[in-house]
Amino acid sequence: MLTVFWQRLDNAVRMALPFATAVMCTLLSVMTLPVPYLGTIAPPLALIAIYYWTLHRPDLLRPSMVFIVGLLNDIINDFPLGLSALLFVSAHHFILMQRRFFTGHSFMMTWAGFILTVLVVMICQWLLLCIIRWQGVPLQPVFVPSILAIVLFPIPCWIFIRLQRNVLSQG
Amino acid sequence: MSVRPHSTGWVHIAAMPWRMVAHRFSFVFFLILAFGILVLGRVQPVMVEGVRTHVVDSLAPLLDALSRPMAASENAIQSVGSYFSLRAENERLRASNAQLKQWQNSVVALQNENRELHNLLHFKSEPGVSYISARVIADTGGAFVRSLVITAGKLDGVREGMAAMTGDGLIGRVVEIGDWSSRVLLITDLNSRIPVTIAGSGDRAVLAGDNSTEPKLLYLPPDTSVASGAHVMTSGHGGVFPPNLPVGVVKETSHGVYSIVPVADLGRINYVRLVDFNLKGGVFNPMASKIQAEVKKR
Image (tube, helix red, strand yellow):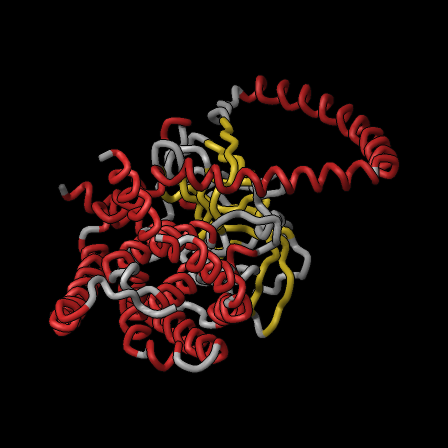
């Protein structure tokens, strides 16, 4: 009986991995690092996690989880509550719709899909912020975090692939 | 890499269309929910800001734990670096010490003179200043907001509107307080407006953040020319900050637009000092004033 319980718990923890990594990425993106002005150019790491797990394990990253990650991102970053949740859930749906196209060919295709996703999400975020606050938010600062996310994309991906192979495949 | 089916065989095939419907339904549901929360945030800012404060407060220990290894490694690197520059540092400190001793003599003489003059005029002294030091645990906002989360809250005596400073000068003010953590809005944030004065000329202006590293000087008197390098201090108007807190230095003048370089290094803030000047003025924060108005209405 106890063995079954531990097995189920172990399985549940494994299955929560995509959500846990997305939450961790959200927290890591606001961490204070000894790099000047990193906070202003921090890449949207949560979006990388959402993109990867939606492509590779959509059964483990439900819209409800994406919604929670979005709300957490809004709360921590002092964005209007619901903004990232709205964008992340939309991005999740878009990635899911284009899943076959983004995963079918090569890693370059996956990368290209991410470039499209991050640019659309960041520009939509800027646009919605301008509308919600009813003031002109500068667009220029949007590009450095987006470019950083695009350039750094293979590193978190490599970590997620390892986690998927070593943790999820044993479940 | 592929999706794992929850079940196999005919059950899985039969469940496919239902799963598609369920997914589409949940997508629409969460989209509407997110939109609803966005609207609620505009209509009921008190409730939404309360939720935000509580969640950040609950996450503060986790953010603190995550930031500690990085702070420790930075300290270790700095210690190693300072070990190699001990001799030069020692020379510099000796020179600085000699200079400070001269200053000390002048300060003591001026203090005595000041006290005597106060006694002569029966001058009512200003309320005392108290300090709270806190560590930065999150540098938040990314491209759109310039704010910090720090490890001091209501239980430590933090109050909304307190001036946040480093050793060099003003960096912002407290806009959100939890029990154990607070959020500091930096002077570079788009929503930051600080009444300032130009040292020397005495011209007044409003320092407005624009999310860049160099906030702009707005509402200067017409036909004013400000010299590059002039010091900018708080003016004390509006009752948010006391006068003469160092803020920055005027950097460039192009087509009558003046920007300032903050005296504090805003790119590398590990610790902040919250200063309570015991002022009775309001908080210069559009969201806070909206919330206060709503509270009064209730």
